[in-house]
Image (cartoon, rainbow, N blue to C red; front, top):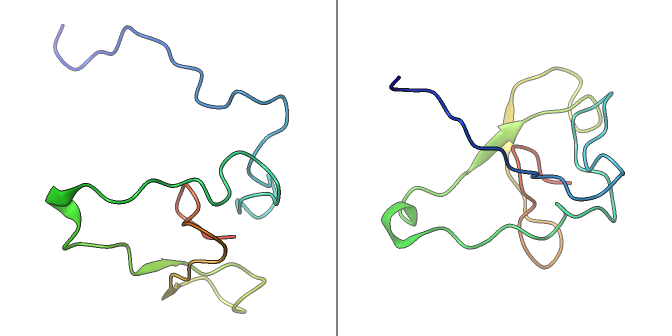
Amino acid sequence: MPGILTGKANVVTSTVSPVSSSTFTPVSGTSIVNTAQANLTAVAAYPVLYQPATTFSKPTFGPIARPVNGTAADMGAIEF
């Protein structure tokens, strides 16, 4: 049937969740911090410029400029 995935992948290989369950932000020292790969050539002209604001950076939820903290971007929607 079209549109059904039958394979499985273990994306998180650690026993510790890399994302905080209360803020949905990356947890310091986990496998997703500073490990994002560079954009492919086809999408290099369309970098991710914004991310959702968290209660730690802004009192309301909304877009903020996406920073890069550390040696590389973090995997996921929010930079730690």
